[in-house]
Length: 81
Image 1 (cartoon, rainbow, N blue to C red):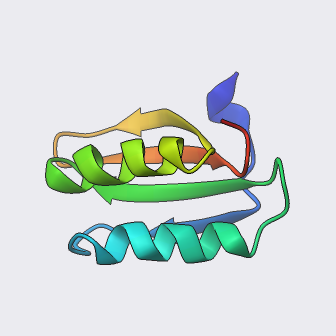
Image 2 (tube, helix red, strand yellow; image 1 turned 60 degrees about the horizontal axis):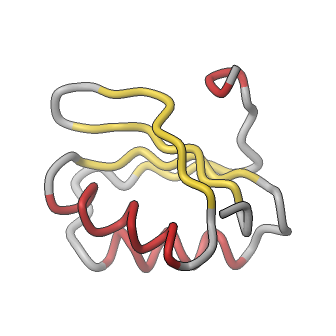
């Protein structure tokens, strides 16, 4: 069911270093209303380890909706944590 959710906005942060990728996520989420969704493509490794917990701590719901060897796709629900 989650994979069929349609994002209100999407950003591709593959190749974007930390902490810039986290900042770009936060800025994109600031432009959304509560319960709107942001789709984020993110590199594995440090970006995954830093961005996902940071967004959860900020009160957003984060779901992994697709995974590859080097990147993953997140669906972030604004204020839905």
